[in-house]
Amino acid sequence: MRKLVKKIIVKSIGLYINLLSYVFPEKATRLAYRLFSEPREGRFRPEEVPEMLKEAMADMITHDDMIFQTYTWKGNDQIILLVHGWESNTSRWENFLPYLKKSGSTIIALDAPAHGLSSGTEFNIPEYAEFVNILVEKYKPQMMVGHSLGGATCLYFLEHYQHPSVEKVVILGAPSELQTILNNFRNMLSLNTKVFRMMEKYLFQHFKIRAADFSGKKFASRLKIKGLVAHDEEDTIVDFEEGKQIAEAWKSAIFIRTKGLGHSLHNRELYQKIYNFLFDKSSVA
View 1 (cartoon, rainbow, N blue to C red):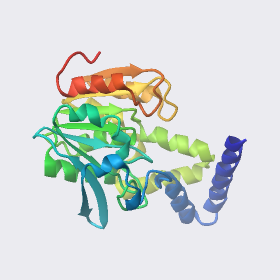
View 2 (view 1 turned 45 degrees about the vertical axis):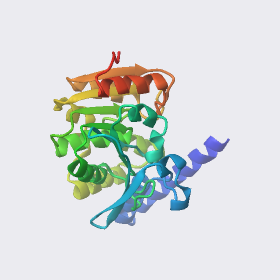
View 3 (view 1 turned 120 degrees about the horizontal axis):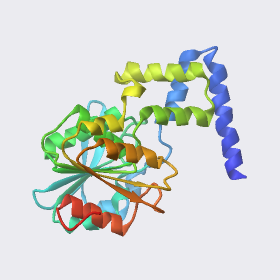
């Protein structure tokens, strides 16, 4: 019953945007983009910071008119950067941190725009990648791990910034095609062609990239660094084929297919395989 009510509400919002597009097209476009880009979960207030984050050295970095939150677990000169996904925050790495800590490495993570304690109301990959680049320039990590849209952000970052310090990258449950994400959003709200085309135009005007060109598999196909891609067959958020396409295009990547882990991919065996890949231990097969 709850799912049915939610579906009716979502379709009603889509109908309103469709009708609005014939009278106030720019307003309809802004509303559609706002629904597409504003996370509804993943934030918390300073007094709500999870215990695992209180153990880290916290720092806020200012860039233009944005402030983004970072966390550092200090170790040796080997540095790992963690990049979380949509409607999440740095705390999503809680179960994975013990595996990374046993390597003795320094671990750095950040809250995405409009997530955790970072400022902003909008999430978009180009801006997130800009934040990532600031940290990479500052700390020069040799390894990166990204989950979901955080993984897509890592691929975008590697394509557009090409920083030489990064040697290994792990991509977990990431989407490949922006066009697919847009199509799914359109279908969810039943947006008409007029609104959908205006949204695509809006994205191009603001980020100078066409949806068809925003492709994780294309970005991955040009990578020469070592990669590990993991995706679950039963992922209901990002289709398994998306991860498979990224892995197949990435010539120097290992692909791990899981089953029953869903989109989160929280699993001790998988974490051990990632650890083995990052630190050249035993087999990751």
